[in-house]
Length: 380
Ligand SMILES: *Cc1c(COP(=O)(O)O)cnc(C)c1O
Image 1: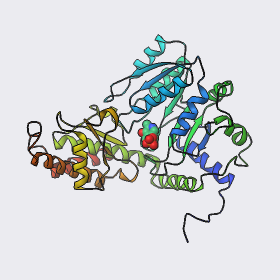
Image 2: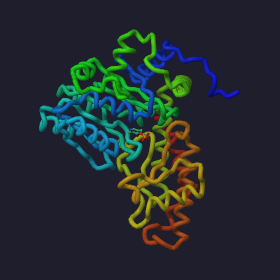
Image 3: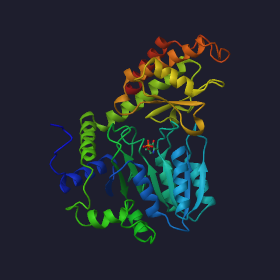
Image 4: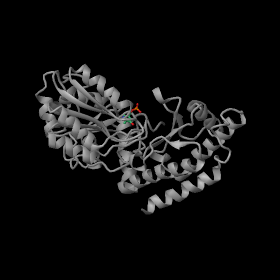
C-alpha cells in the first residue's frame, strides 16, 4: 500500500476550499486560481495575460526574477522601463514614484516582494500605494514572502499576487497560485493577446471554473500537490500565521547575528530592514570564492541549507536558506557551525590568510549570538 497511490478523486469542492484557504492566507477577497505547476507558471501567465503590445511596464529589478520578468514583458511587446537597484538593498517607494512620474503612460508594474536569491525584501505597502495612486496594475511575486512576512494583498493594492508552496509554507513546489483583482480581470479580458486555450491561460480558468461556479474542474487536478498544499495550510493554521512569520524573522535575525559574530563573512544585504526572512545571503571576502566556502561547509555538514549563490554572484555570494522547517534555531546554528568549519578549512589550506583573521571563526560564539538574537526577535 502506498499513501501516494489509489487515492479517491479530489473533488471540485475540495479544490475550491483550498483556493479559499489560500485567499485567506493572502488577505484577499479577489479570485484566487490555484495553478498546476511551479510558481514560474502563474508568474508567466499573469504577465502574458495582462500585458499586450504597447503596454508600458515598469519592471523593478532587485534580483534575478525581475530579469526574467523583463524578458517576458518584452516578449509581450511591452515598452519596458527597468528600475534596477543593487542586489544588496531594497527599492524605495520614492524611486518607484519617481519612475512612474518619468513614465506617466505606465500601466503595469512588476515587483518581487522577498528575493530568496539575493536575500533582500521590498516595502510593498509603500510601493503599492504609489502604484495605485498612479493607476497602474501591480503584479507581486510573493513566492518567497508568503508565510514569512506579512502579505496584505488587498490592503496594499496588489492586483496579481503570485505564491508558491515551496518556501516558507514548507510545502510542494508543484503547485502555486495567483490572485486576480477585478481591475486585473478587466485588463486581461480586454487583451486580445491574453493566452486562451493554453496552459498559461488565466481566462480559461475564469470562464471554465471561477465564473462557472467552481463545480466542475476543467482538468484533472494535481492531486498529490493539492493534498500537500492543504496539509501546509493546516500546519500554518496550527502554528498560527503570526507565529510562522515570527519564526522566519527570528531565523533571519539569528543568522545575521551569527554571521557578524563569525567575523569575515558579512551579510550581503547590509541593512537589517532590507533583509529577507527566508534566506540570508553572505558576501565572502575578496579572494575567497564563495563556491569553495559553500562546498567546504557542506563537506563539514551535508545537511545544512547552505548553497553557493547562483549566476553573476556565484563567486562572491553564498546563501543560507532558513524557510519552512529550516526556520529553526538549531538549523541556523548548524549552518553557522558548518561555515565556521569551512573558514578553518580554507585557513588551514594556507590561502586567503590576509583576509581571514584567525580571531573570526568562533563557532561557539556565533551559536550564542544566534540564540540571543533568536530570543530577542521572538520577544520583540
Ligand atoms: C523561489 C522563488 C521563486 C520560485 O522559483 P524557483 O526557481 O522554483 O526556486 C520565484 N520567485 C521568487 C522571488 C523566489 O524566491
